[in-house]
Image 1 (cartoon, rainbow, N blue to C red):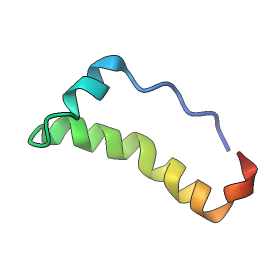
Image 2 (tube, rainbow, N blue to C red):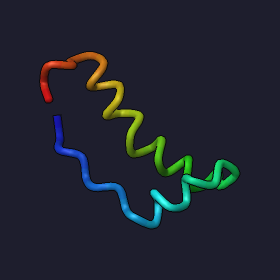
Image 3 (cartoon, rainbow, N blue to C red):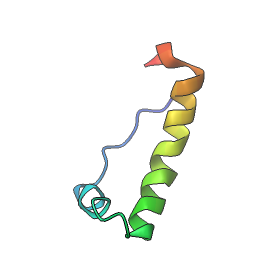
Image 4 (cartoon, helix red, strand yellow):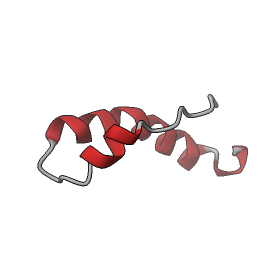
Length: 45
């Protein structure tokens, strides 16, 4: 598994706004694969 990049501070701020669809899209694009991989291999971290 690749080490995740730190989430940009600006994205962390933007996702506080639930209506910011672009920010949430970026967040999901970054973290969905990591969550999926973790679910398949929870002991690999």
